Length: 363
Image 1 (cartoon, helix red, strand yellow):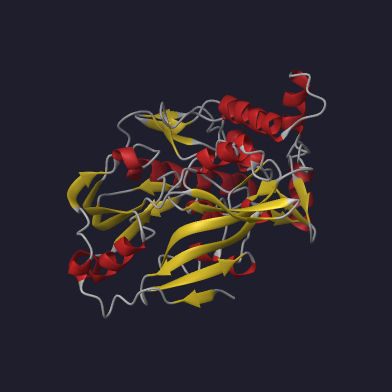
Image 2 (tube, helix red, strand yellow):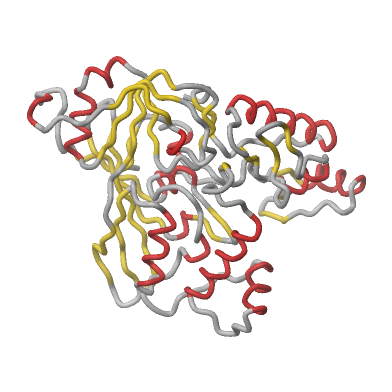
């Protein structure tokens, strides 16, 4: 369960108590989403502290507009202009709040960039998130998505988060259990979607005797190439960074949101039937006789890898990544994603689910 702590009641406060936030109108969001889609927001505002939250929910623009809460913009596809209020989460700060001989608990502002937080952990010799290096987006978005890579998910080190409930004006604390983490899932993508603004997250990290996860072959190969036999958390982080840079395009150079689809999971009976017809199909066995199939492999086998359609396409090195080469439109990328889904379904009978959120269609 989450804990509720009433900090301020917006229903009894007057908006003029705090300095006015700076609203902008009809601005381009092209620099605020990693796809680089040039869509416009009718209204835009940034939040920096809890006083801003109170002013926000008291404000006329918020009360009369639909809203979109924006972090790093690395997991959205803007399919059209947004006829409402875009709220940019800019809560900052990285601070240890307690420690013991083995662990340190670090509270991080939701607006901090995730990779910057990971690099700070490496610099301070705090272990647990090194496998999650170079993942784009903000700290606040990380638990929403339960980000994961190379055998590690955020839930493995996540302790709790603070979130502002927009309807009631109260602060809630969600622990690991109450976040309902799943594969790229959390309560904030389901029953609590669009109801909260996350202000900070706390992680339990190791101070010494770090338990490294180098089970993925790519990490092992990279460490072997570097002739590293006793890796540190920095070594693992550097290996992951090099692997990701070799496989994934830099959003600063080519617009993309990383992995566009989730890796689908099928049961044993379906997997065995598919393996009979497609004996080279790779899979990772999960508990309860489930098998995870690499979505990139499915997409590549359907002939999409490297395909370009005007200003958009599928990346030449990683079929799981849809890209915007310059002036692509969100609607066109959404159409491409649908065509990929249909072709994979037609060939393998497997449904691919987008990892990216469509906006405004999903709001």
